[in-house]
Image (tube, rainbow, N blue to C red):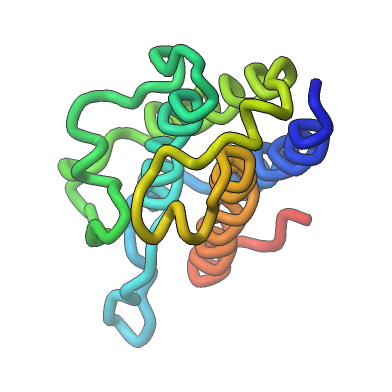
Length: 175
């Protein structure tokens, strides 16, 4: 493993671990629901949206690493449902988002695929220019910077949303 991957891998493990811990006591019936306050829905990203959104990115990371992305791919339709800027919707009937076990499985499969691949990625690959264009390349100019952001900062931001969402449902801390 290269030195850059050496710095990313332990942090990705932490992201994956926290993602699992935050699911403690989350029941499928609230997974895609908005919490309420004073009888009104609280507009926040719920767990189904956060995990589904995050699950879209491992295939993109694998492509940036020059690896086969098939194992990290998400089902058809997820890109539009979970892309950056997509609206998180309350899903009381369970018809908008996939079931909790399917969403969580896609999240875990994707990030574990990236984790396993990173161990053999050379520094030269991670030092290459980020193939994205525009704002994302400006923000993360190299493949390594993009991989670091997409495996650390980005998951932790959305997992923080899940943590706050949990609290609004009265679920306790996980750490």
